[in-house]
Figure 1: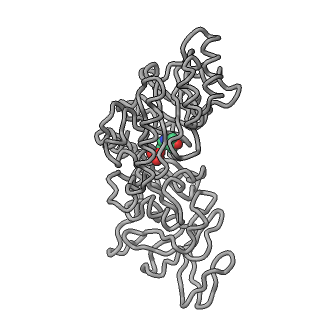
Figure 2 (figure 1 turned 60 degrees about the vertical axis):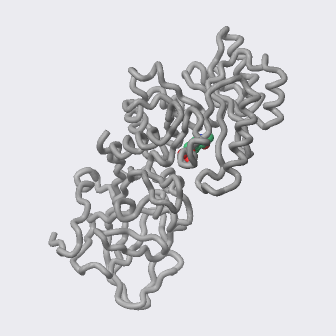
Figure 3 (figure 1 turned 60 degrees about the horizontal axis):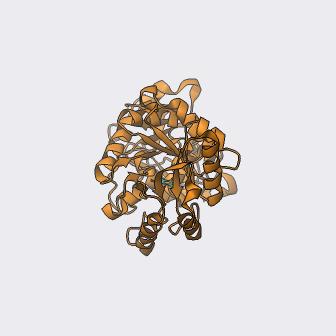
Length: 386
Ligand SMILES: *Cc1c(COP(=O)(O)O)cnc(C)c1O
């Protein structure tokens, strides 16, 4: 097909890996992931940098992401659910397995204690009931079981409330049967460096952890690392920044892009002035308009709320999404392109060098985290590097 010289060649590599007429290719750059891990580890002044790989490594594929990070020295992984932890245990390379710890952030569901222990997972204990259940299992098994104690320093989501910490301070025997691997807490506003809650949570965390047995402390998520060394403590827990999301919104993003999403054109057409496009007829052409339909929709995580604020790119050329995003497709106004550009099968960029995950999130009125974790199961996934 003839390409017009003024437009950069399309990213053509996905064509080779789009079997069965797949209509979009999600590329995950594992080298960029490793660079991001190293950057965070270098910035972090504490002892160890973990990786948060919950929700299938924020949608990018824990099976590919975790072993690559283990290979460059990551020895602490956080998941949210017990099932994620069990799956991750099977994925991690054997040579690192015995020294790799997997922490389950959401804590222990009643009755799940033995599964957690036998799966070689370390629970994050979020309540006295969880502390008691884990300690009881330790006593039954005749060994001290590893656990992280989470304290609530002011987010009111997970963790021991100050009154529960008081109870543990008064009755330390309750922790008999438990080896406290770390005391942790989580910041609610770390992505807003000037938010007063950051200092308040830091002060609360300092106070609460002193009431518990001495143990390494873990406080900073991705954004927390960028709040400076006061917030670092011993073990960092970055997630989003590993995957390229800007840790400090509004500042230049120091992270490399890890994800690229290229969608294929499935049909093109000319419409006339006053013709409407898509559900609800929310877009009406003001003149002759060329429309391209892409095979990506909200079922693929291209959020419906993106609507007409979203765009796609062909080379440097931004093309507006027009009309509502459908479940399996969306429509672009491609009138700005030369008439011979874009045919069914051609790729356009939805996420890539011209439009970051954060840009896509902004158009959808959300955050990069939600864009990544929404990425659907219908893409051909291609992992490069690593
Ligand atoms: C998800 C999560 C993280 C990772 O946060 P990012 O902002 O993605 O770096 C760290 N700690 C806890 C408790 C979490 O739930």
